[in-house]
Image 1: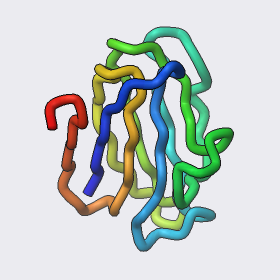
Image 2: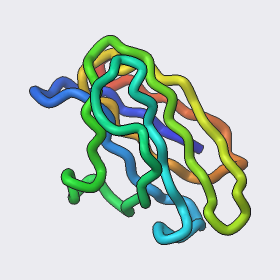
Image 3: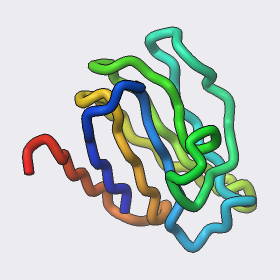
Image 4: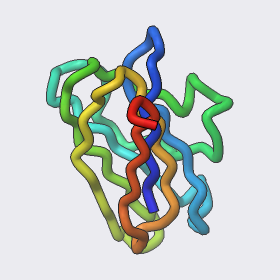
Length: 108
């Protein structure tokens, strides 16, 4: 399951953490750069948002991006197109075979 939480913050983009059974050393994440900002390379995931230099991908507010997760052992991938509506979108990955869950904190 992928859970998104949108909150207001002065820095824009996505914070991504891995809470799946796939180890961080075997799980990579890719964030597109349709708006020509940032890097679109594959990176190893982290277990929490407490490491902003490793968990954060800068992207502009209001832009759509594609976030893809890849298991390095199997090559299996799964991705989602997400709108960075609130400026900061927190993404928690729960597994490649899980459904996508979205929680928008601005509407709670």
